[in-house]
Picture 1 (cartoon, rainbow, N blue to C red):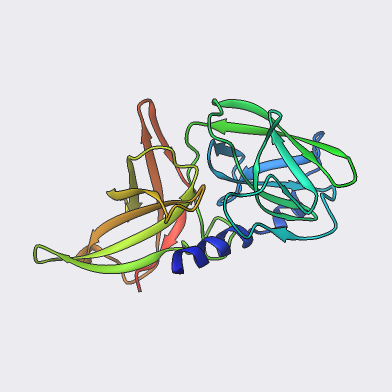
Picture 2 (cartoon, one colour; picture 1 turned 90 degrees about the horizontal axis):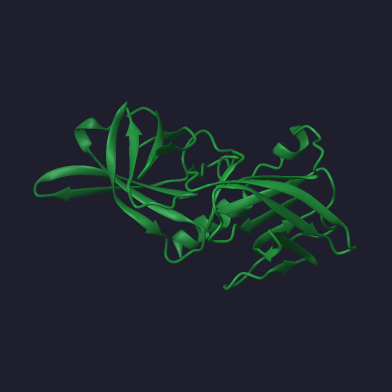
Length: 234
């Protein structure tokens, strides 16, 4: 129940200020990572579409799984494939980027209730890690869960982060310039598009002050770094 509540907050607490400050482009839709607003996204990730145009005059969110392909009369197609929708408002759509997309540029087509077609370009990578933060703007304190464990007499702090765009099982948390390997990388109670990453840090190495951090995910060809955020084990 706690994780599902966190997930709902993460989906809806996306800063709409991005749309207002974004320059008007030739295309009318901008596609970004829902966690950090980077234009780099990954297949199967939670993704956001912003526009200076109006998608719809009402706001609607999905209330059950599987996610619908239409909300408030709005549809979003990725390379002509319907995408599953979390949330639709006049200038914002949160959707699940379909699985199976190859790295490169892809087309997003938003079909509005009044029949308009709005076009955007999706920049797909094999991984594009974005960590959700408390203020929903991709920076500041991470939207994290903090726990304490004792393992074989050693005390640890456990940092549980929530991210999207992670399509690998090998990841680390860079905290105080030291990398800590993830103990778990996977689905968070089966919530689509959301990945949970658990990290253990010895208690004696935890700072009492906020620490700028980021996650690094590894692939066979290299690694990808997430947005920077603050870990505060208070």
